[in-house]
Image: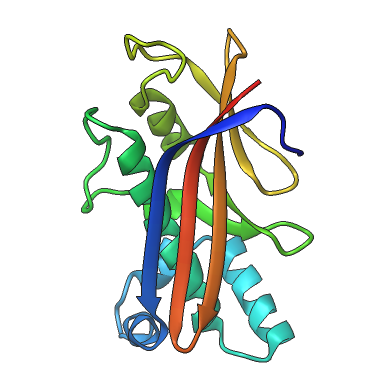
Length: 180
């Protein structure tokens, strides 16, 4: 999927995770941490660790940072609208940070989370901030996109960058509105 039209940033999220502390929490008996990742996220993290010759925890930690950054970008995009979730009920497993075939990370939302995103954001094309019916589209290239309907004038797009080095995992996420 290529770029078309202008994009406006609706929300920015950034998160840092200590890989050592994350690995400790992941290894704790009875922890729910591993359940916060989908089977696909766990499989991709294992494969990346094998290919790079490092540990799975680093790759899971950077995906965790990505999930946190998604929440922050979404929260900023809400402006004065009420948050659809709190920290205690946020569906972490409903957000996947997955690589495409070329190794580029992308944000994928489960249907429930996607629906809540669609309902929570004001219509960026309406100055009165009324809601527009967004319908979700996730392309094969792993970029989460949400195209507006029925007007077709705008779509929501996630942009994500992940990195880990020196014991720190980092993620930066933008939630953008693409105007066609």
